[in-house]
Image 1 (cartoon, one colour):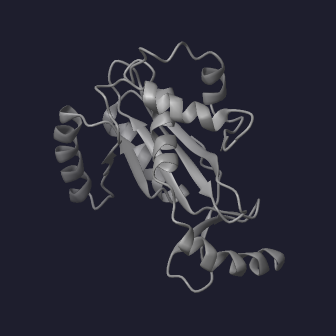
Image 2: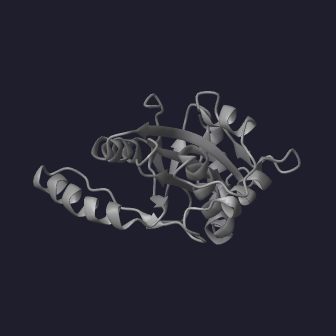
Image 3: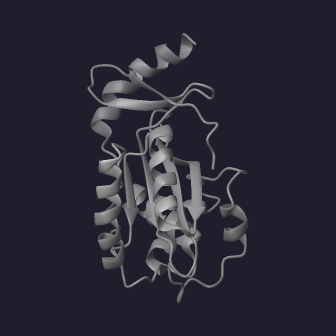
Length: 211
Protein backbone atom coordinates (compact mmCIF):
# COMPACT_ATOMS: atom_id res chain seq x y z
CA UNK A 1 0.00 0.00 0.00
CA UNK A 2 1.18 3.52 -0.80
CA UNK A 3 0.96 5.10 2.63
CA UNK A 4 3.79 7.62 2.35
CA UNK A 5 1.71 10.20 0.55
CA UNK A 6 0.71 13.38 2.41
CA UNK A 7 -2.20 15.53 1.32
CA UNK A 8 -3.83 18.51 2.96
CA UNK A 9 -7.10 20.30 2.50
CA UNK A 10 -7.01 23.97 1.55
CA UNK A 11 -9.84 26.38 0.93
CA UNK A 12 -9.25 28.03 -2.44
CA UNK A 13 -10.87 31.31 -3.39
CA UNK A 14 -14.53 32.05 -2.76
CA UNK A 15 -15.75 28.48 -2.65
CA UNK A 16 -16.76 26.19 0.16
CA UNK A 17 -15.22 23.18 -1.54
CA UNK A 18 -12.06 21.86 0.05
CA UNK A 19 -9.51 20.59 -2.43
CA UNK A 20 -6.94 17.94 -1.55
CA UNK A 21 -3.45 19.27 -2.25
CA UNK A 22 -0.14 17.47 -2.44
CA UNK A 23 2.29 20.17 -1.36
CA UNK A 24 5.35 18.13 -2.28
CA UNK A 25 4.55 18.53 -5.98
CA UNK A 26 2.24 21.55 -5.68
CA UNK A 27 -0.75 19.77 -7.23
CA UNK A 28 -4.39 20.25 -6.26
CA UNK A 29 -7.09 17.74 -7.14
CA UNK A 30 -10.60 18.65 -8.20
CA UNK A 31 -11.81 15.22 -7.08
CA UNK A 32 -10.40 11.85 -6.12
CA UNK A 33 -12.35 8.70 -7.00
CA UNK A 34 -11.59 4.99 -6.80
CA UNK A 35 -12.58 1.87 -8.70
CA UNK A 36 -13.05 -1.39 -6.80
CA UNK A 37 -13.47 -5.05 -7.66
CA UNK A 38 -14.23 -7.10 -4.55
CA UNK A 39 -12.41 -10.36 -3.70
CA UNK A 40 -13.81 -13.46 -5.32
CA UNK A 41 -12.10 -15.99 -7.54
CA UNK A 42 -9.26 -13.47 -7.75
CA UNK A 43 -7.99 -11.08 -5.04
CA UNK A 44 -9.90 -7.83 -4.79
CA UNK A 45 -8.33 -4.64 -6.11
CA UNK A 46 -8.81 -0.92 -5.56
CA UNK A 47 -7.15 1.98 -7.39
CA UNK A 48 -7.66 5.70 -6.79
CA UNK A 49 -7.14 8.48 -9.33
CA UNK A 50 -6.99 12.21 -8.72
CA UNK A 51 -8.31 14.68 -11.28
CA UNK A 52 -6.24 17.82 -11.73
CA UNK A 53 -8.23 20.73 -13.10
CA UNK A 54 -6.18 23.52 -11.61
CA UNK A 55 -3.45 23.35 -14.22
CA UNK A 56 -5.80 23.99 -17.14
CA UNK A 57 -5.62 20.32 -18.12
CA UNK A 58 -7.96 17.37 -17.77
CA UNK A 59 -5.43 15.00 -16.20
CA UNK A 60 -5.95 11.92 -14.05
CA UNK A 61 -3.13 10.84 -11.75
CA UNK A 62 -2.59 7.52 -9.97
CA UNK A 63 -2.57 8.02 -6.20
CA UNK A 64 -2.78 4.61 -4.54
CA UNK A 65 -3.91 1.03 -4.91
CA UNK A 66 -4.38 -2.05 -2.76
CA UNK A 67 -5.38 -5.68 -3.12
CA UNK A 68 -6.50 -8.46 -0.83
CA UNK A 69 -8.00 -11.93 -0.63
CA UNK A 70 -9.93 -11.54 2.63
CA UNK A 71 -12.93 -9.28 2.01
CA UNK A 72 -13.03 -7.73 5.47
CA UNK A 73 -9.33 -6.92 5.51
CA UNK A 74 -9.52 -5.60 1.96
CA UNK A 75 -12.36 -3.24 2.91
CA UNK A 76 -10.42 -2.02 5.93
CA UNK A 77 -7.47 -1.22 3.64
CA UNK A 78 -9.80 0.76 1.39
CA UNK A 79 -11.20 2.66 4.37
CA UNK A 80 -7.69 3.50 5.56
CA UNK A 81 -6.61 4.75 2.12
CA UNK A 82 -9.82 6.72 1.77
CA UNK A 83 -8.78 8.75 4.81
CA UNK A 84 -5.15 9.20 3.72
CA UNK A 85 -5.87 10.16 0.12
CA UNK A 86 -9.20 11.96 0.59
CA UNK A 87 -11.06 9.56 -1.70
CA UNK A 88 -14.56 10.94 -2.26
CA UNK A 89 -16.30 7.86 -3.64
CA UNK A 90 -15.67 4.21 -4.42
CA UNK A 91 -17.25 2.72 -7.56
CA UNK A 92 -17.79 -1.01 -7.92
CA UNK A 93 -20.03 -3.52 -9.71
CA UNK A 94 -23.38 -4.39 -8.08
CA UNK A 95 -23.08 -7.64 -6.16
CA UNK A 96 -25.83 -9.09 -3.90
CA UNK A 97 -23.25 -11.09 -1.94
CA UNK A 98 -21.27 -7.92 -1.19
CA UNK A 99 -24.40 -6.04 -0.11
CA UNK A 100 -25.12 -8.86 2.34
CA UNK A 101 -21.52 -8.91 3.56
CA UNK A 102 -21.47 -5.12 4.01
CA UNK A 103 -24.56 -5.20 6.21
CA UNK A 104 -22.70 -7.27 8.78
CA UNK A 105 -19.31 -5.68 8.17
CA UNK A 106 -20.60 -2.15 8.74
CA UNK A 107 -22.53 -3.23 11.82
CA UNK A 108 -19.28 -4.54 13.23
CA UNK A 109 -17.47 -1.34 12.27
CA UNK A 110 -20.10 0.78 14.01
CA UNK A 111 -19.90 -1.37 17.12
CA UNK A 112 -16.16 -0.69 17.27
CA UNK A 113 -16.71 3.00 16.50
CA UNK A 114 -14.78 2.61 13.24
CA UNK A 115 -15.56 3.88 9.76
CA UNK A 116 -17.94 2.02 7.47
CA UNK A 117 -17.42 1.13 3.82
CA UNK A 118 -19.83 2.53 1.25
CA UNK A 119 -19.71 2.41 -2.53
CA UNK A 120 -21.68 3.49 -5.58
CA UNK A 121 -22.51 1.18 -8.45
CA UNK A 122 -20.35 1.67 -11.52
CA UNK A 123 -22.32 2.95 -14.55
CA UNK A 124 -22.83 1.00 -17.78
CA UNK A 125 -22.33 -2.31 -15.97
CA UNK A 126 -22.92 -5.32 -18.21
CA UNK A 127 -22.77 -8.55 -16.19
CA UNK A 128 -19.06 -8.27 -15.58
CA UNK A 129 -18.08 -7.47 -19.17
CA UNK A 130 -15.61 -4.60 -19.15
CA UNK A 131 -15.01 -3.93 -22.85
CA UNK A 132 -16.85 -0.58 -22.82
CA UNK A 133 -14.97 0.60 -19.73
CA UNK A 134 -11.64 -0.58 -21.14
CA UNK A 135 -12.32 1.29 -24.39
CA UNK A 136 -12.92 4.50 -22.44
CA UNK A 137 -9.76 3.92 -20.42
CA UNK A 138 -7.65 3.05 -23.47
CA UNK A 139 -8.61 6.32 -25.11
CA UNK A 140 -7.08 8.17 -22.15
CA UNK A 141 -3.81 6.24 -22.51
CA UNK A 142 -3.26 7.07 -26.17
CA UNK A 143 -0.24 9.20 -27.00
CA UNK A 144 -2.37 12.03 -28.30
CA UNK A 145 -4.38 12.57 -25.14
CA UNK A 146 -2.12 11.12 -22.40
CA UNK A 147 -4.67 12.18 -19.81
CA UNK A 148 -4.15 9.13 -17.58
CA UNK A 149 -0.86 9.02 -15.71
CA UNK A 150 0.17 5.89 -13.78
CA UNK A 151 2.97 5.76 -11.23
CA UNK A 152 5.95 3.40 -11.35
CA UNK A 153 4.87 2.11 -7.92
CA UNK A 154 1.71 0.70 -9.48
CA UNK A 155 1.38 -2.81 -10.86
CA UNK A 156 -0.98 -1.51 -13.56
CA UNK A 157 1.50 -0.40 -16.28
CA UNK A 158 2.86 -3.95 -16.62
CA UNK A 159 -0.64 -5.38 -16.77
CA UNK A 160 -1.69 -2.85 -19.39
CA UNK A 161 1.31 -3.61 -21.56
CA UNK A 162 0.25 -7.27 -21.65
CA UNK A 163 -3.51 -6.75 -21.78
CA UNK A 164 -5.30 -9.39 -23.86
CA UNK A 165 -8.03 -8.61 -26.36
CA UNK A 166 -10.74 -6.78 -24.43
CA UNK A 167 -13.80 -8.20 -26.14
CA UNK A 168 -14.51 -11.04 -23.70
CA UNK A 169 -12.74 -9.81 -20.58
CA UNK A 170 -14.64 -10.09 -17.29
CA UNK A 171 -13.97 -8.08 -14.15
CA UNK A 172 -13.76 -11.21 -11.99
CA UNK A 173 -10.85 -12.47 -14.11
CA UNK A 174 -9.03 -9.16 -14.41
CA UNK A 175 -9.84 -7.16 -11.24
CA UNK A 176 -6.91 -4.75 -11.59
CA UNK A 177 -7.79 -3.70 -15.14
CA UNK A 178 -11.48 -3.57 -14.28
CA UNK A 179 -10.99 -1.34 -11.23
CA UNK A 180 -8.86 1.09 -13.27
CA UNK A 181 -11.36 1.06 -16.13
CA UNK A 182 -14.27 1.69 -13.74
CA UNK A 183 -12.75 4.75 -12.08
CA UNK A 184 -11.54 6.14 -15.41
CA UNK A 185 -15.06 5.78 -16.80
CA UNK A 186 -16.47 7.78 -13.89
CA UNK A 187 -13.95 10.57 -14.36
CA UNK A 188 -14.39 10.77 -18.14
CA UNK A 189 -18.07 10.06 -18.65
CA UNK A 190 -19.18 12.26 -15.74
CA UNK A 191 -16.87 15.29 -15.97
CA UNK A 192 -16.25 17.72 -13.17
CA UNK A 193 -18.03 21.04 -13.68
CA UNK A 194 -15.85 23.98 -14.63
CA UNK A 195 -17.87 26.60 -12.73
CA UNK A 196 -16.07 25.95 -9.48
CA UNK A 197 -12.75 25.59 -11.25
CA UNK A 198 -13.07 29.07 -12.77
CA UNK A 199 -13.77 30.54 -9.35
CA UNK A 200 -10.74 29.00 -7.66
CA UNK A 201 -7.98 28.89 -10.27
CA UNK A 202 -6.90 32.51 -9.74
CA UNK A 203 -6.73 31.96 -5.99
CA UNK A 204 -4.59 28.86 -6.45
CA UNK A 205 -1.77 30.50 -8.42
CA UNK A 206 -0.81 33.10 -5.78
CA UNK A 207 -0.94 30.43 -3.10
CA UNK A 208 1.42 28.26 -5.15
CA UNK A 209 3.82 31.16 -5.60
CA UNK A 210 3.98 31.68 -1.84
CA UNK A 211 5.41 28.20 -1.20
